[in-house]
Length: 110
Image (cartoon, rainbow, N blue to C red):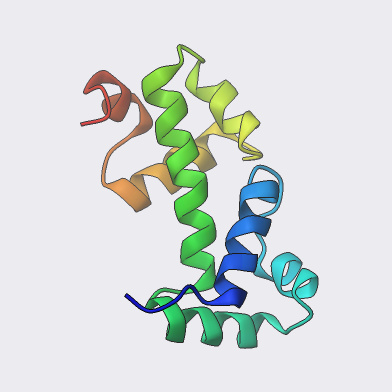
């Protein structure tokens, strides 16, 4: 396993801090003093996935956690994760997982 890439690690830490409110690559790129394109290229070379993918995965991980481990209504989870509308959250979730938030919760995360 190769050593962690410092830029990727810095991005992960920023995402961990800001993923609830910031989804745009430009926000993270600016914090890392690079262009969004350069950040994406760098992350893709280092990890095999785009920076945007890492951001979406972090949001998705939190969504899944809340769906399985809390009784929060789905619309509240959507707003907690800064989706402007619960339907946007449902679309995002289904696109990423192939399942609706409701089905995911009903199956206990399976």
